[in-house]
Length: 509
Image 1 (tube, rainbow, N blue to C red):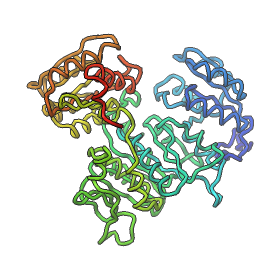
Image 2: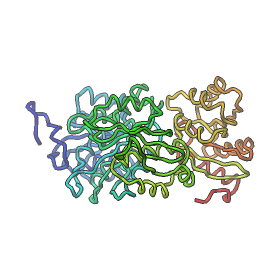
Image 3: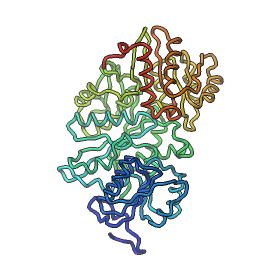
Image 4: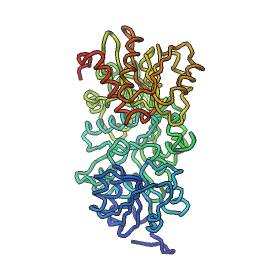
């Protein structure tokens, strides 16, 4: 491996799978799916790898020595002596390690190179090449809400257009696993959390991404306890646009995303492509008289538009909620940047279905529609759900993650029929209603056991709701106070509804 004049490793020489990684001392922090993929990749490259984690699942702990790495497991409130003695040249941190974590602070104080798994993947993206001898193009997606849906939509559009594409990253498939897939890809659609972007914003030289296209869907308060401030969270999200080559896609209805594009250092000739639910300008995608159109990726864009689908067609497939249409517009812009034909986009939307717990109708009983949007884990997401179902009986609450829910209650609370409050921060939510929507009937589910919470919620909601009403689980909060995940919360809600009304109320899938 090449070294600089001072004897230190030249990390800018490590910009390829085929570079000399032999003997590079790398500490991998965390042993979740992401951490293991990083350790496995580095071990395959010939690096010397120490995995440091608070606790490890048995399967991963067993595999670490098999791949040729070492494992240290224990408390991480101080820097382990084993890590200090290892003297890492690079630290690859899993996204859960916040900037204020003692190990991250130590790494920065010691001047150790600090990478995330995304930077490592970018450096070695040329392991499997396309027929033209180039690596897969990367399309980056972030935003406070809608990331996963937009990532899935984009990948499905690319596949319908004949490209080999995969949704990866924060969506659950580590990018490093896709990089090493021997079949290879034409494009990777990479969902990025603000945590991953915080690390990526520090990448320089060959580690700095140069994606084909990128989008920040929206911006609202979230993960403030991780980033420390809204400004830090916003700056992390803005890193998605850095270095973009072809298209920076932004939300015309969210000025923060436009400002991010304006500030970004991009490749000469990169275009800004706007999307919203209104009539599009000549470099935008949007909606005209119920028709979803592209006015960005055609030669005649100043006088013409290309039809992609219709709102009526989307409604038939359960995709017409305003925030979902916005996700579709963003995905379509990304797909069109890679020349996917409008007909292929329309075809993909005919078969696309939203994930469970995303504005999912779980039952229709006695004229009441029961909707599971447990994935609405912050106020911004819940606001979109409440806009899609005005006048709903709203089930709200959980862990607020340091986010103030007052603005959401002020904006949407007065429009609900009633609110049923769950979770450990009920008092905070009740206080927001008292200040901003005091006329709305408010019901609280006390500190019930996990298995009892949703049964009580459903009984209360059934007493309140009448023919034509919607009961909406859109908690605007994380689930970990009472449930194992947002999916567990949503599943328990659906099961409680089925027990109350019978399985015949479940809509046909």
